[in-house]
Image 1 (cartoon, rainbow, N blue to C red):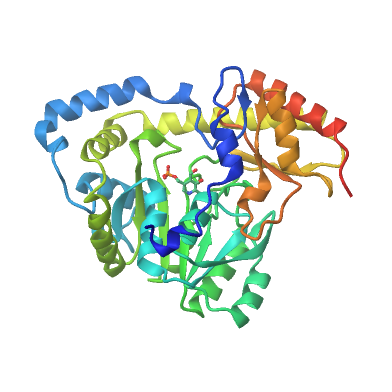
Image 2 (image 1 turned 180 degrees about the vertical axis):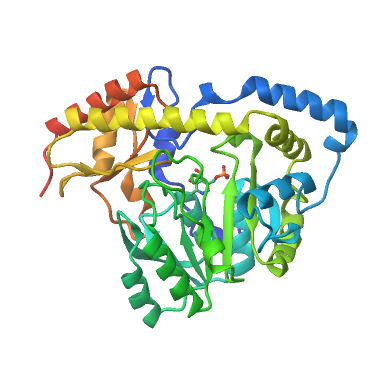
Length: 392
Ligand SMILES: Cc1ncc(COP(=O)(O)O)c(C=O)c1O
């Protein structure tokens, strides 16, 4: 009955458990959700009203597959202010970056093709590549993202179709790729013929340090694809994101997208465009940065206070996640089950490892909880960790 590729599909046991957990009172560090109390509700309401009065029916009509022209122009201008390497033909608006990943899989993956990813990597991307029956190879990563030496070694024996990376505050680890590695990645990619996919939904959420240039802008090559999204900067409910690529590739994206949904929702694009033009987008980003930074710091100090000394974690300079590595022998799934009894949740890191390793790791989201709940939630997790002995 089902297509052959559906046979290998499994829902994630942990995702299923976490889905059941939206009960009141739970402190959840599990989702990758922005802070709902910061959504610019009034400004979006004003933008929606203006769109309807100014554009009326065209904001509710079918529209072109590539996306609303003024919105595309704004994104291009932001990424390439001097119009050196991008034009309107280099961008397509997608229904979230997740659709970008789906379209990429449809465009570039045949059954059995190889995809290289960081370890760990974004679950939604892994699911998309797996649906198209790709073989995923996890390239070792550290606190500076993918290890380029290991990548070089793997490229001697494998020919990937895609290399999928999140250079800024990646999901799940929060790690960013520093400048020297970015140059090295561009150099390596220049010697091979895979597509390098750069997924960047968190780049704007920077708390400290300098914003680094995208791999796409460094390479300016047709083997690079860049993706960004308004999910984490305005609101995920809009499902408005974009793919930037060579114009011939964008043409192919448009054809594949037509078969999927014709175009991204028109009204949402108009509202996002109006909000960018006349709303408080820049102040809003600053508010997100300030609030998330306070929440990150709050989580870090609570972890210092309550987590066992054997646990290690990073201090991400942006984004929404802290990554913790527990002493060898801990099973984060088991810890989660005990934490659920105490009304607190996180995602066991193993979910993000294509090879099933990472049993003793956990992803903690800090954007979606108040400082008070962060302190209390981390205290509860810490208590479970201290009471649980690692199984060596
Ligand atoms: C790395 C990464 N890529 C893509 C997505 C999907 O984002 P969107 O809401 O734009 O579909 C997410 C969502 O959490 C993500 O973390």
